[in-house]
Length: 276
Image 1 (cartoon, helix red, strand yellow):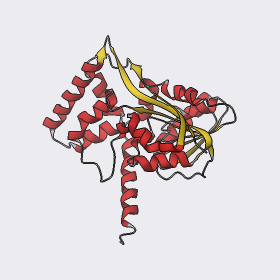
Image 2 (cartoon, rainbow, N blue to C red):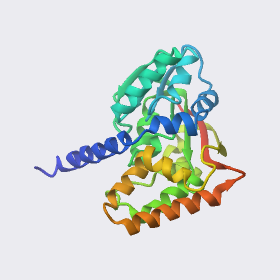
Image 3 (cartoon, rainbow, N blue to C red):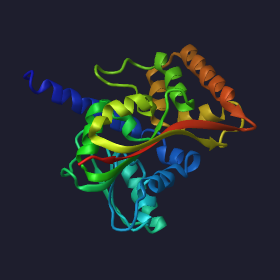
């Protein structure tokens, strides 16, 4: 294999691993039972309306794409993982939403320059490994004057801290891959977008999560349903001591963040307009 094709093969292998991670477990249950309102919130913040051409990047099972379609917008839900899109298609049918579902890599979007009025992502694009490439693609397909909207977990919030807790137990990331919660850091996102956007509105907010009132509930659910957590545990193999240690760290983290049976998970909510 030539040097010219080595990076292509490496990228294909990396994306295959990402696809497999998100096919694990049951992410649609995370979206529908843990953070059910965040997709609709992002749609409102983006001002999506009837007739808009909308792209939801890393849409998963459509927690933002489906509410966008219900406004009467012309929506494309794109995701790297076809298993999630299949669930989304079923959920859209149940809710009476009509939209297009496309398997697509956030770093290589199969759409024309300026094709969309609104380009958004709800806890999705942050998991693309090469942040600048994904940001460039997001802006490329947004028309001048169009809206970009993002909801991403912050490094300091609960989910960001969960990834920090799991890192010592996970295999080392591939060269050049960046941590997902950096998309929840304002300065990092400003650097990714640069002077290609204006009218930036960025604020940290929280979602109240009351699905895990008892010690161990969060860890048990995420070990069964959340792909990145499942992947870390699988990488431990038969090492029961390390598994027990990670169990303890996740339980302690959840307990630290729980007040009166509920947690507040911090995320960055950002909207902006693409410059001409």
